[in-house]
Length: 142
Image (cartoon, rainbow, N blue to C red; front, top):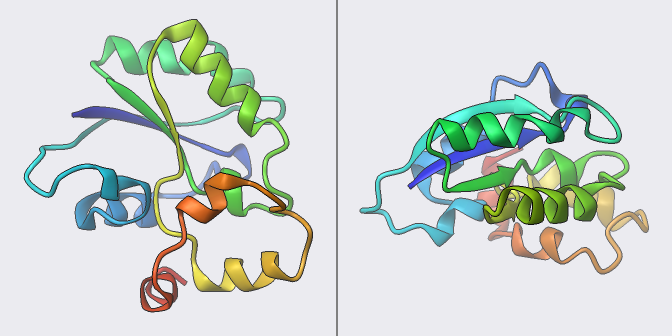
């Protein structure tokens, strides 16, 4: 499976360590792939800043490089506040480019879970729930 990862521009300088670790360990959103399924990242870019200026062309480049799925990195969910454009970006990429979009990459670190638990930032954001792991895994991603 070839995939692209788009991260929130607030984390544009992120080296991707947690995302690539989760990919290797098949945790977080990457747990959906079997451990024997080869995964290859064919693109790693920022959204370009609110409201997602790079979303117009970055997915196209990833698809030209063979991307079969695009992940919107966990930073979209754990930022303060979570990305207000998240659902729009997901819908746009899926409809415009015809490729599935998965929200999330690595599990939500425990320190982010604790901070957001005190705030009304997640509400019913299903993606936050789907990126929860065991406490031990969340602490390992702190």
